[in-house]
Image (cartoon, rainbow, N blue to C red; front, side, top):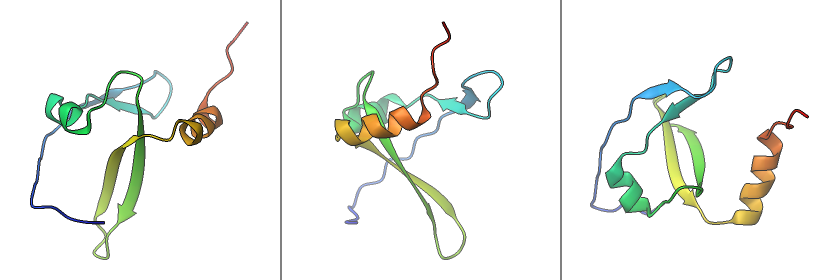
Length: 82
């Protein structure tokens, strides 16, 4: 990964995504929305890493591969009740 001389640090507050689950929801700050050029309905790719000193990090990128995103989404979608 190439590191650039640019750092943007913004914060979000988590809230419950769905009652009865452990999933959480965060609002993407406006500056990051603009920086990643993401829009409603876009997919995000989440990469989790643990550094040698044990720090846990998440790298989030705009997901541009629709086919791969669809396969991942299908893995987690729930069946609709009739």
